[in-house]
Amino acid sequence: MADQETQRIAAQLTHDRMSRRGFLAAAGLGGAAAFLAACTGGGTSSAAPSAPGQSAAPLQSAPPVASASAAAAESFPPAGPIEKQLYMYNWSQYISPKNIDAFKAKYGVTKFQYDVYDSNEALIAKLQGGATGYDIASPTAEYVPGMVEQGFVQKLDKSRLPNLANIDPKFQKLWWDPNDDYLIPKDFGTTGVLYRSGMIPSVPKSWKDFYELVKGPASGKTVMVDSMGDVFVFPLKMLGFSANSVDKGELDQVRTILLEVAPHVLALDSNVYGTKMAKGEASLALGWTGVLEQQMADVKDKGYVVPSEGTIFWMDTWVLLAGAPNPNAAYAFLDFIQDPKNQAEETNYNLYGTPNDKAKPLVDPTVLNNPAVFPPADVFAILEGSQDTSSNNQRIDIWEEFKQNIGK
Image (cartoon, rainbow, N blue to C red):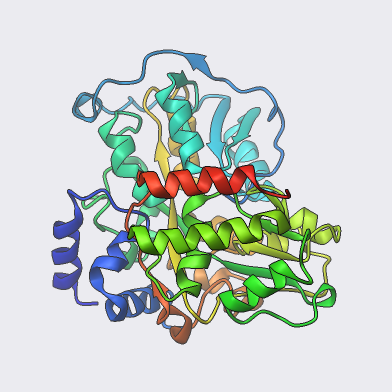
């Protein structure tokens, strides 16, 4: 995509509240495919490793920052000695334990506390409730503008982050942070279907196939991530609608399908659904690729597919939280994790695509050539950017009703 077109779309969307795929939606389907193919060289909640001290949260009750303008006006934390501790709030199994150990050893950090959330909504609700005490979080890109607006995120002193130079320019200066003031691209992925081929009669190729398997051979053995936006993709795309639809009639049809499959669903689970599959408790999942290696490494019949009707694309980020108690350790980590060697380790560990251009040559060739991690051009062509529909009351009502009928 030409630079001027990128900037035009970014300017158009800066003031809109859209989802992590909103940039692609505005670009149009063809633009989305071109943009994403360029990002990956043309060829996804997620859980975090148990780190020492993970069980006890450092949260304290305090009023949240009043406004983004007030937060942005604050001076950068002065550089100083790196603190001996770091508090991170993140998705489960989203950092390589090897990188955690290497970071602690390099900087003399003795306490790396890693607490987990299972949705962006849970992260933001915690902050809105007045929680403080964390240094770093990893929200999905579309949630960052709102977090900035509410004063939950600090502006970054980029002079302290030289490894930002390693990030592919195509992942920079996009609508959710046009000047790259508040977020650092972490990784990207898709939402699709995971399966155990030895536990089902046929490998699903479409959302329609997924639907039939859930009601039949995979009944009681299907897991879905606990994410309204991702789950709604399944019925909407299967019916031939946009993943962004807020049309009442179309959502009425979505409700029918979700209530039909709800009794056949084993669980909604964003953290250890791969473990359920590895143990044979589940044969099918609607989710992301990360668990394929993290929780299903020893499973021989595992697989992942982007359904033929299409799906969605997402990008997760790093942010420095307002009032971070250990800012020097936080800056050290944010730069450390973008070192090409460390970033390649992240991709090898979590099986999500890296936006770090210098890291790609260091990624395991098996991972780099894995279409589930770095989708080829024909898959990008069926990806859809989505708008922020999380506040649509009909969607919320359907989601709550669906959850209440899981396994019943």
